[in-house]
Image 1 (spheres, one colour):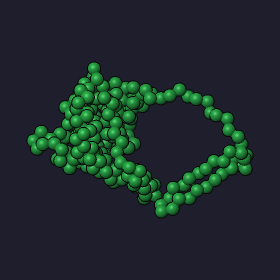
Image 2: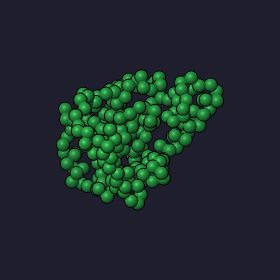
Image 3: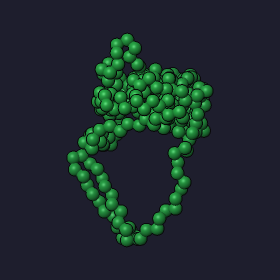
Image 4: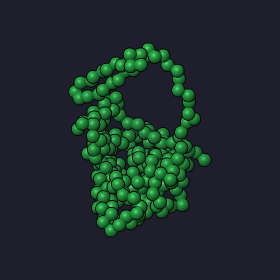
Amino acid sequence: MGLWLAHFYFGSVQDCSLVIIEFTTNNHRFGHQTIVKVYRNFGNLCSHLLSKKNIMEFLQNENFDLVLLNSLDFCSLLVVEKLGKRFVSFYPGQFSFMDVGLPSPLSYVPVYGSGLTDQMDFWGRVKNFLMFFDFSMKQREILSQYDSTIQEHFAEGPRPVLSDLLLKAELWFVNSDFALDFARPLFPNTVYVGGLLDKPVQPIPQVSDTVALNLYFIQRPSVVVGVVNLAEMS
């Protein structure tokens, strides 16, 4: 059986610089609108990829049977849908970070960032519901950044919906552990594989006391460079 590992990295160095600049604005606050702008760029780059007939034809001619993809890379979902292939999704985090279609009973599954636990009173459940509504609206706004790409590359009528494509995964590998999250219902095709990508711990190399530690403070619009000598600190 052929297997294709789908992971796309889009953009040039200039694109990456723009992303870094956005991340460091507003006093280094990583806000929702920053994430929306990033995914808007990803959506445009995804449209550029789907327009490359030579790449799409190459992938189609490979005749693989299954695709292993990162669920946070929404373009991979569109490419797989375009090719008509089955896929296995790898989720690099806890389920609470994103709504992937799993059952989430709001009475005992707290929304990410709510500060609640699975032991909620009436007002705690009201807060959880309101935060779930806000969380869902923000995720819908992020997914909507791919709407123009979908309209451009998929025929009218059977156009895919990203939230529905997530439910098509044959298998979910979750790079976390059930002990790190609150108890919640799971589908039979969900497997926790926390630590799968971890590497054995290596001993810390011995360094000289005279080695200098360079500290780079990235500011906008200038870059400040500070050098601290460890020997002077000891």
